[in-house]
Length: 334
Image 1 (cartoon, rainbow, N blue to C red):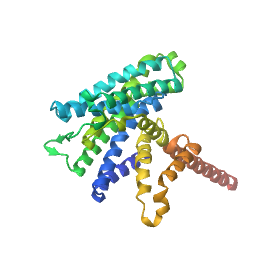
Image 2 (image 1 turned 120 degrees about the horizontal axis):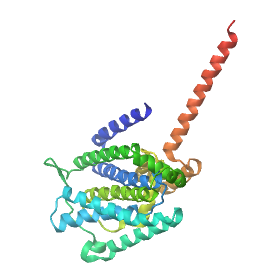
Image 3 (image 1 turned 90 degrees about the horizontal axis):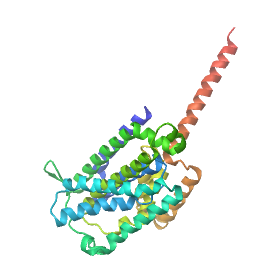
Image 4 (image 1 turned 90 degrees about the vertical axis):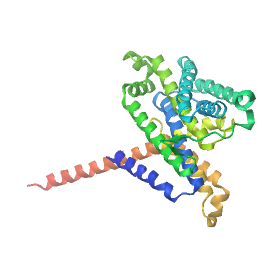
């Protein structure tokens, strides 16, 4: 009941928020929703399958550059580029996932880090394809049933619909046999294999699904900015996406959404504090860093994990009170 109530409140807030925001706020919220989808994809790899990946920004860049190149140089429509960007990222996810069959944990992190660096260097140095550091300009925004999304408000609602669809798709995967197999793979691969789960197949599938989410979100990201260069797809952004998953709550459906809010929106909120709070304005990055350190130190399961621990504690306290009341009434009975 609480999950449905929180979901309803979140939807209502997201529908009401754009009426009170200026263009920059709408842009920031659209960016947050796109990053949520990228973090949701990484959550499949890290949270549900238990594999460490530092290449999520690279896959996002693949989707972004695919859409940017095809729309600006070849005249393709945005919606036509989406399947290609998603499929290309899915296939590369399988290729990158192969090392996960032999190496695990921090070794795999270095393998995916190397892949992200290679992708970044391709974006940075292959001028004939990506225009190098100058980037690609004039990326068109899509039309939905004849409605243009040039205005920040229209693109906000497009991003909201995109997030809702991908969240529903992620919920379906988690509740499907694939999701249960991912959870078994994360908890104990040997036991999962003994139950007949093909570890190789599901490991590759976790990487591929996470990569496809990132590639699809990358297409929307390129359309949102209408300009891309290699910088947003560097290694630092892969670390940011990993922080979104962990701080929000790994292996939790709503964890990436909360984590993306902490990583992307919280620094902006601190920076735009009223001038009377000039201390916060001057040291907002330091305050944000201390907050993240304390969160990871005292709540390694993330914000969603903290909420679950709190609800379990309150439930146990309520049950203990009910038991004590029942025992007292029995003692008083004649």
